[in-house]
Length: 219
Image (cartoon, rainbow, N blue to C red; front, side, top):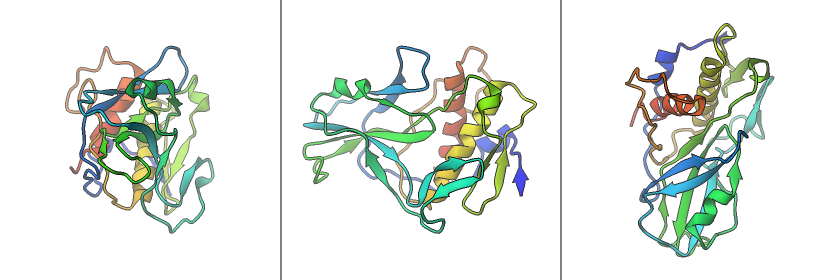
């Protein structure tokens, strides 16, 4: 079955409560120097220095990504939490943003005195890096959940609306595979989902606003 979810309903989409795993300090901000879809994550309001800093991507157990034929998964019945380090432990907080990341995933920044043993660690809020497109022709038409139910992108809408829908569907798919595991709060958008003041927002900011409403809906 394939369906289209209205944007208002996407803001209120119900998911199990999410909570912090490590004590949360500061928030990631996506910084770019060009028009690519990749960004560097800068840790703002990080007030507790540590010896090691790492970028981690959240990919639930069993979930390997999305395809036009449905979720690509090693085990469709597998659920659970996987935080994958994308960098070696870095000694400098400023060096985090030098490592760019792909859109369409949840990320967090982790700081520890001993990363391998996860000793005296603090984590940032999580951040959804938006997946943007050059053309509506490049946006997949459907995203599938674990039960192979499809969520269709509304093709008769502007590109920014389709990008919002597609990114929200990817987030829903990610949370579906996560199975209710504990996650930190999300970085706050420039304009919250309760506001109609969106005329001056970029496409990235519009996606951030939408996924924040979904992610935090049941906190």
